[in-house]
Length: 155
Image (tube, rainbow, N blue to C red; front, side, top):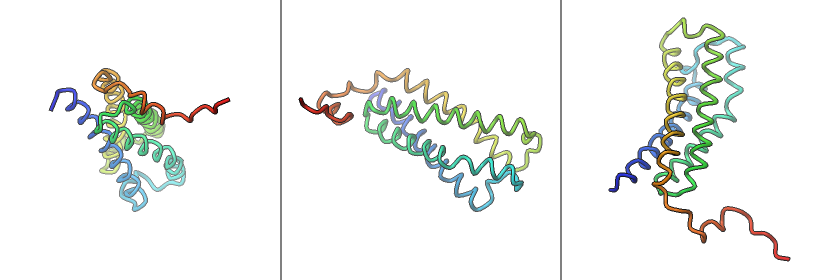
C-alpha cells in the first residue's frame, strides 16, 4: 500500500467513526444515558440538533466512502463534514460554558466533554489533513465529471 493510500484510509476511518459516534450519541440520548441534565432548557437545546447532526453524519459517511475509494469528491464532502463538526462543537462548548456544565463533571458530562473535544479536534485535523493531502487523490476524470452536474440543455 502506498503512503498516500494509508493517509486516505486514516481519513476514511476517522470520518466513519464520526458517523458511528454521531448515531451512537443519539441512541444514547433517546435512551437517557447520554443526557447531562433533565431540565426542559437543556432538553430543548439538545432537541435542536438532530437535523444538523444528521447532515454531519451524512457528509461524514460520504467522506468516509469517498476517501476509502480514493475518490476526489472526498475533498468537498470531507471539508463540509469537518466544518460541520467544528461548528457543532463550538455550539456545544459555548452552551456548556455559559451554563457552567463543565464545573460538574459527572460521568455523562465527562463523556460530553470528550465529545466536544473530539468534535473540535478531529474537525480541525480532518480539514487540515484533507487539504494538505489533496494531492493523494487522482484528478477527476472528465468522463466522471459529467455526472456531477446536470447537462446543459442543447439549443
